[in-house]
Image (cartoon, helix red, strand yellow):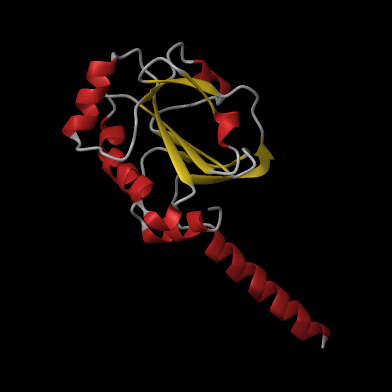
Length: 171
């Protein structure tokens, strides 16, 4: 009987982990959920956006720049992810970390036909330092309590069905 219970436990925990984390090599789960104080950035009108005002939502902060080719490749799928109706509690903030002007960032979005995302800025690059970014694109995922639970370092296809199904667990 003990053998059967142990076997069932091993199988269910292994299957649970396989379902929980999609097979995306640059997706890193945070072992100990991280909380950050004062996560503030600017919208396109230079108004402060405070992440603390979005508790209760699944959040993705995506750090990018117009000169970044991998950012350019992943941005359309990130735009599709924001429009995904099965993730209605998701809010994506694409944050431009370079010192680029709004017209240059808008031109980047227009060229890629981005319709579901707004442009945000980390003007003095304070968030890039706060989150210890090692490169872009980097996406940081926050749960409904405002705690970081995962990071994506480098580009991914946000249209990946396995990734979307995994995200639904946090929505």
